[in-house]
Image 1 (cartoon, helix red, strand yellow):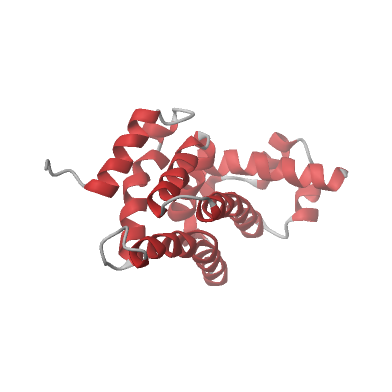
Image 2 (cartoon, rainbow, N blue to C red):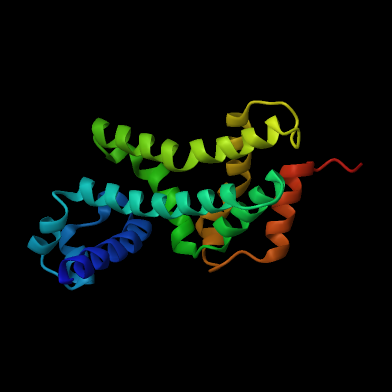
Amino acid sequence: MEQIDSRERILQHATQLFIEQGYHRLSMRELAEAANISKAGIYHHFKDKENLFLAVLIFHLDALEHVVDQAAAADGSVQLRVEQMVRAFLARSAEQRAIIRVARQEMAQLSEQGQQALRQAYHQKFIGKIAALLAAGIEQGEFRAMDAQVLTWALLGLLNPYLYPAHGNQDSIDAETISQVLQIFFFGVVAR
């Protein structure tokens, strides 16, 4: 039980410190102090800083995957399920939203093998599942016929500003903002 608790504590503190400082500036000594564990204790769970960083990112990708899976399995139209997914993404804490930004910004710090592992997990757990949900909307005639990957990146592009500190200092995004983002995604900005 103590091993699980210390591993989770390390992941929690590492998430916060990677968000605040980035990959390169974070020292394992500083993480050990923040998590109240020895450096040896960190290395017991994670072979190096890259392994720790990947574990943090995969942990958060697992949580995002769960959000997408819940939306995909929900009843109702694909549009309603996409709305549910977006609301759940933006309801996450500022820290949970910021980790996606950190992954993109710090990916170059990883080895080629680490980058490949992260890209694969990101596509498998997140991008691919969103694209599949949007493709279902296209196939069912709810959305216009278009490339589901382009549609996926358009949606994520709209959500991108809410992953950054200007919006990240808000612990949650207000319902009106979320509604406006969804309206832009589904209906555009042209007055009809």
